[in-house]
Amino acid sequence: MRASVFISCLLLASAPAAASSLLETLGASTEPSGQMARVEAGGVAAAYFNPALLSFIQPQYQAGFVVMGQDLSIRLGDRPAGIDIPDSITRARRLNPDGTTSRLEVRPLPTAHLRTARGSHDGSGALSFIEFGTVVPIGTERMFSLGFYAVIPAGEFQGQRPFYVDEREQYFSNSLHFELLEDRLSGAVFVLGGSYRPLPWLSFGAGVLMANSTRAITEIFIPDAGNQEDARTLSKVSVNTRLVPHLGLIVERPTFRLAATAHFPLQNEVDGQGELQFWNYDYPEGQTALYQPFSFVHGFLPWRVSLGGRYLIGPPEGVSGWVSASVLWSQWSAYQDRMGEQPLERWSDTFAPTLGGGLRMGSHEISLQAGYAPSPVPDQTGRTNYVDNERIHLGAGYQWRLDFGKSRMALAAHLYAAHLLHRSVEKNPSASHPVFDEFPDSVDIATNQFIGESAGFQSNNPGYPGFTSDGWIFSAGISLRYCR
Image (cartoon, rainbow, N blue to C red):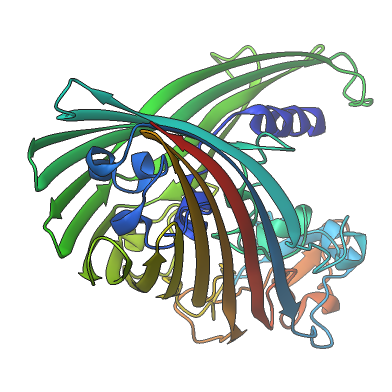
């Protein structure tokens, strides 16, 4: 059975997925517009953030490079005395209120025998990405435009590291993890967008982002149940590509722009089962193996709808500036975690505002953005340990243009920093789904005598009795664009 779980995890790690959480967190990380990309994107990133903008973008080819770092911290509260689960649980049988006994419904490990020390996980690290894309007009009037945008990791192509958010994580990392960061910010992104401009001031856009569904079947034959390290294994994997749509709208006037977008929910699913066979084993009726189904969800993003606008200040030529604003609504109340489970305590929908502004002086352009991202996660006072923080983010961009004939080269750079505001959580026994006693009153399975160590409260939940979290996210990006 250990072999079955191990092989299944290998299959999960090999499944590709779209990592648009990276774009939702960093914005257009190589454009001056940065976090205002749904309103201002002037390059290939518009294919994702607002495809209606493609109608107002010159035909171009673009390539860039991004470096991102996560400096994240989770500090666990000290475990109180007497909470550790003793070795005697391996001999325990639950003592029911009516005096009868039954098997333990939950099988925690003795605390001293956990494979991993509590809180040993570190969510920090650095990633780098290569991005490229193109914008191509269709027809002489540029009524239609197409855009392609890709972001490819320069190192690990795809990382998926699922985890449990409650006491079940004791068997694995025995730690807490940032729910909406870490592995969600790795992986490749492929986007195709198009726009239709029926009037000089009006553009509609639509795009699709590549996602996938993976089905994995692992067949294992163990010739000797007493030696489970000797196994014969076959793995069957199928990956089906799905296209997840998003929409955009732009109203463009001489001094102002209105923008709206809608991104459909996204999730990458991995499901399947292990089929375990033993030599000389009586299977349940109708079965030829023992089945171990599993299901995971990676990179879940809910409905996201944005509204924004930009107002120009000054003449089109010479020194001019602009101010912009947007708000993004996200339906986090529909969230599914990596195990495909909805939180016991419902998350909240959020409204995330962003402000921006910039100045253009001839061939030079500078811009600034600032925003606030509230956390959809309620205080984790009960059994679950979803770690998430409110974020304040700042961005700064610069672009230099060089015109030659009818063509143009543009060199752009962008810096981004987000601070995860400090958050402290304490577990509460009065929570609607509290941390529970994993070693209830029990008797010894051999002697039928009461096990004194089972009295009181014991738990291996890594988030008990509480935790604090904060951190930083940084990114720096640079791109070169050729427009014709």
